[in-house]
Length: 140
Length: 255
Image (cartoon, rainbow over all chains, first blue to last red; front, side):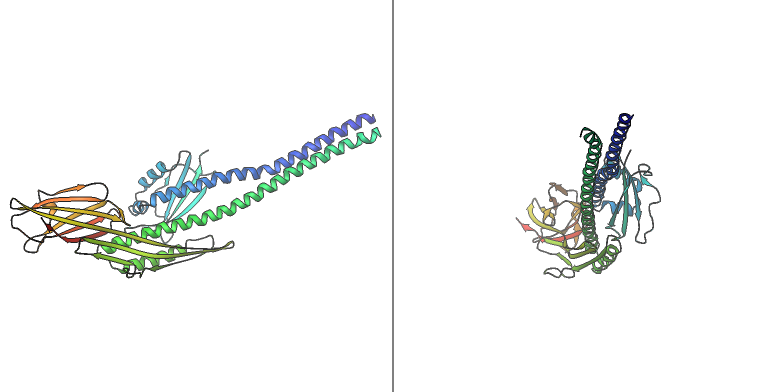
């Protein structure tokens, strides 16, 4: 009887030890996940910024916005952004009013890890200033 | 003795488990601290992104202003646009405080940031130069970036006139430069002066041919006649691909 009790205690101790180790593992997991996802977000931010800089280098983005050519902007973004990236672009004028009357996006960003890039833009022709907000997310 | 050893084995197991949990937790803390460093780097990367953005947009603003001024706009355009841009940038920085300022270059041959010289010696230049200072402050410290934007379009032209069969065969060689590097033209027009001193567009002549070498060099050829004109003046007007206007006049070398 005494021996049987000791055996049960050993089993309980083993379970307790296992629980301690697994709880440590479980606690550390969110940080690893956040760490991994941060890398993804950083690369997405850099991709988005480079795309905006590329579009703006010769003043092309400002010209397209000035002409309210949202279709062409969407088309250029779709070409320049890698496959597997969803985007949504919003253009604000100097009074922070949204000026794109149609959506410039290639999909729904809801429920995803979205990064947002704010980019200041000058239109060379009429000297209008714009704020462009590009939101990006990896497609699931 | 045997009994004591049996009792201790469970405690050793627990101690080992606690040690493992401690190691795992230590690793977790290490990873957390590393991720904090990365967050600081991310902040620094965001600062650099903002600086990169402002630099490029400042350049675009100078290009646009110069294009406007070179095509008849007021010289004040540059200063007033930059003032608007200054307050726009300052009001759109959210990571801390931003102090942005500019100075129109007064270094010779610039005056109020501009150098527009369309000479009669075959050289014409439209240029703007602005010095900027961008100061960003947040809880981690202060960053000051000073940079200069110089936008210059210049052309050099050389004309040779050959009197042949009662007509002038005129060859005009044109070189176009952006910031001293060969550049392409968006639009190029060649004019010649007749014996009465009136200007005419060479492109309207049937004999007019413009060759584009693709490297910023253009050759315009045309014939004008029949009266012989010595020291004929030739003018070339050019819009580069940034819409900056420049012109130059030269006198034909008679051969």
